[in-house]
Length: 181
Image (cartoon, rainbow, N blue to C red; front, side, top):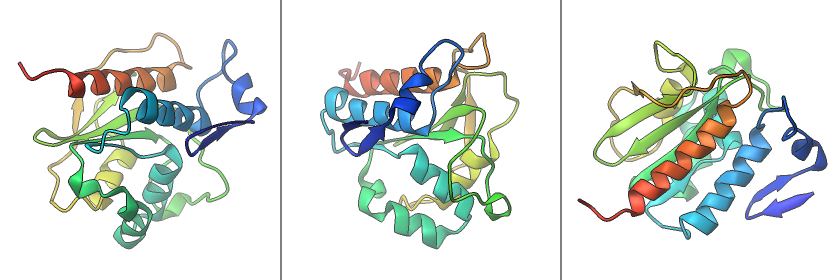
């Protein structure tokens, strides 16, 4: 096992990094923790919501539970909120508290001034239901506009969506730290 910040990966998780594997919740969270500490330098303007917390928020479907899970993150004070979202389904009809599962990752971004948007590395015609639900439940202290689907780089296989999500999180960190032009 390897720990970084609040994230832990096991040998089984690391095996997923071999050819044909994909990034699971633990690997995405581990990378988020790396970004939070090493790239963002614990920037108080930025919040990384772990995949497990995002999954629980989406699965609960209840604003009260979302507030309980997210209160300590002080979301109303954040300029940038990055939330990796998997397609495990949204809403209490598909509850699976034992494990966050899914086949595809996208990135939900809430940026002060531009509202919420989703980046998806496969061709998508609409915002994912999980991203919509998470956005509706976030305790950010203001009403968010509808989630917009933005163009993003596209993957050419069926296993790199998590890598694309991680790369997009890096890009947002670089953009946030760049001097205003």
